[in-house]
Amino acid sequence: MTSAQSSPFPYLPVTERPVFKWPNGSRIAVWVVPNIEHFHIEMGPGAPDIRNYARRDYGNRVGIWRLMEVLTKHKIRGTVALNGEVVTHYPQIMKECARLNWELMGHGETNSTLLAGMDKEREKAVIASTKAAIASCGQSMRGWLGPGLTETWNTIDLLKDAGVEYVADWCNDDMPYRMNNGLHSIPYSLELNDMPLFAMPSISIADFKQRIVDSFDVLHAEGAKSAKVMCVALHPFLIGAPHRIKYLDEALQHITGHDGVWLATGSEIISAYREANLP
Image (spheres, helix red, strand yellow):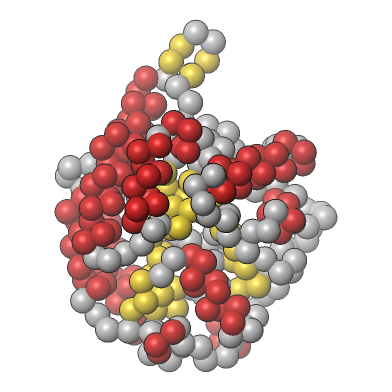
């Protein structure tokens, strides 16, 4: 992408797309994205950011283990939005991700540093170091979610050069699509994402569960005509809290109680879409 006036993808309304089905005729592909992140403790010179750091650290100490238990119960493999620094700081989490065969999707080095405003060489280095961290875990970095869903005008091309196949930053569709440079966009979500929804003002956890259920019901029904994708985006320090986790369990029970549901990872979804040679 070379200028602020250029769109990285073409416009293609849902009314002009070919009919498509997922493997085994599934109506809907559901992927769940645990954001496993590392934040820096510094607030400023000489001051630790205790309140925010400790809250997020709860996710890595406690919340992620509850989340892993619930996803395993429903036979769901997570597609992890992974900060590269997690590999260094939380080896026990990475060991369990490997045991569960979860996919690792690049999510920058740390969520304390966003891509917005970053110069091209620094951003290239961030992508490379994140890719190397994932490679050290025995996987290739096939997907990417920018920290805070941030990008620069260079991001899409830098990801393509790094061998990334899909990006989740663009929450603008219910199906994947091919971007101008050949990278694929995959539906992520801000509507079914505990981070913005549990910010101030926060919706209730019961409302969050109902949003998941209602979204699934509509997309599953529409999928009878042509397939859809649904993403549930989760942060262990939020959804992994004791008063919230059972509602996720109940929402996933609703989803897995239906036929025509493909519980997939991000790369599985993109591979199936690419094999169909769709726009």
